[in-house]
Image (tube, rainbow, N blue to C red):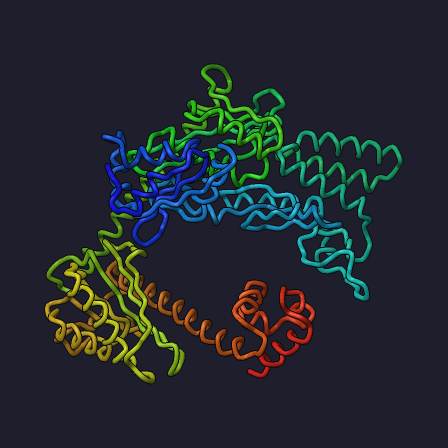
Length: 610
């Protein structure tokens, strides 16, 4: 296969032989595939100059490539790390992807502070704090978080301790209900508090047995010194931890930190399971949904999962057991050792206890995948029933598989926008969503705005000879429906199925009928209509806020002498919004690069006057 344009062909002729990462981009400049290579020249050229491909998806992908971007790295390990980060950032269409990975929570212990806090966060930061996770079950994570913070009385507040000069803290409710030792009022020394924090860290690392032994030793020492109150606290903590250890149902009989990884696949769906053994005891199971192409090999899916999961895993084990060998086994192992900063071994067991654990992880992955497929089939059947029910309730000529819904949003006489959302067989297709900035209507005239938005959308359908939707839904009653219908007829779409859905009583208005249709509230048809109407409303409101905020930022900040694009960007990055800037004090503003005290005072003076 040859390149489709001279610029791309020129790039392919001048590819470097260095290791690095390549990004294949479509005509819109969006990455559709990101890969790594030991030799960029050899690897990238195979996509365009090979006589044939084993995987049909590669041919489909290459047909869409309009440009190639290269990033050279010092070695293969760096290219593996860069690839994982870029895939996480851009989420290309043809890469294997962890679903919703950005939402997985972590437990953060702020060990970079004199009196560390325990927090639940969604992002890893390079701030010298200690992180644990990611946790795929928020419920289990919060249960663990609550258990450990209550047991060891670690603070979860946002106080800066020690307090800044001239300021004093007072103990809060947590101290009075025995969930904190009161370090804010110096009721605990830093050494005493650090002991408790170390206990939490050990527990989160799965070292519960070791921690129980330490607590037992402290209990005996305190009892010997006749400090019976401290001895009782150590005993209670040890007993609570023992109850957690006893609940584990797998003990491999050896003190080892090990992850057991398995993947189950069906079509483009896959589930990966990571069973975590710490000190030889099973302490958790993480499961992840993945999306892949049906033509991706099992080896590709497994290797991609490992790179994405362990790239965001702050606590690596000593061993990782895999269900099969990897093509780039040595490279992945070298990368893992580099990010851990110590020895880590990849193992593909064939016999014995480790093999049985891999089989157990595989059974878990298959069970979870079966549950996922059942849920998807049930969901698909329910959506299909909604679409069929809508046809029957409204006496439509055909089932509305492809539906669009329009809504208008404005702020008084300004920032008027429209939205269009697209549902295919009852499911939202966000790539087909459109928003519109109203151009031809002055003032607050929702009917004319609806006509403009409908006109612009269907004008494009007519000009590009696209298939019109099966059903158009407008958010509103008779007025909005009449405006939309008039525009459709003017554009030659008189036969287009259309209805209006009024918010107040959820009444459905259709052309050529004066009275509304009332659909039972429990009907799947009304549930679907409300879903698409609410989605159009959400999308319109979101765009309206974006337009309004942009206008507010321009009028509020750009009118201040001394605030140009760079300083405006720096302020918004630091405080998030104009309101955030307005609520800050002079000292905080002056900490932003390029903002001195005098300029900070001027900014606050202008913003508070508006």
